[in-house]
Length: 122
Image (cartoon, rainbow, N blue to C red; front, side, top):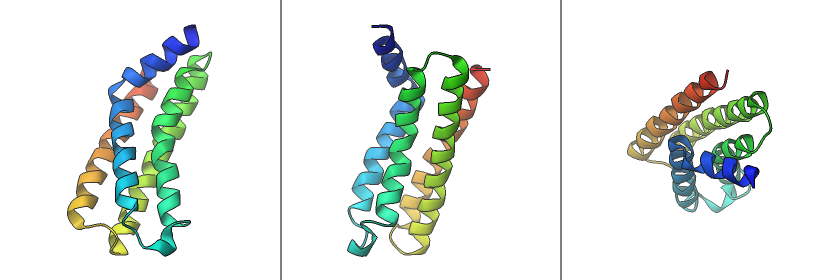
């Protein structure tokens, strides 16, 4: 029962909510990518995107702050990975400049929120 409570607490966090929302947006955007990217950039971008909220929830179910901090660090790394994939997608012509800027700004915010969470877990 305690594990469910921890997972629910993680899902109530603003950083989880924002990163989950961004994951849904990444899924919609990558549907428009060229078919040849289905198992390439599109797939990798989706994995990186869902890794962020996934690691927040998984970390929240761990037994120690140290483990939780480790998973939040992984989530932060995945957010950085998505930022690069957004740049690549824009430069390949798969994303508009407007979509790129909007998504990048929100992933930058996620990264800052995760950094704050890491500091709070020390």
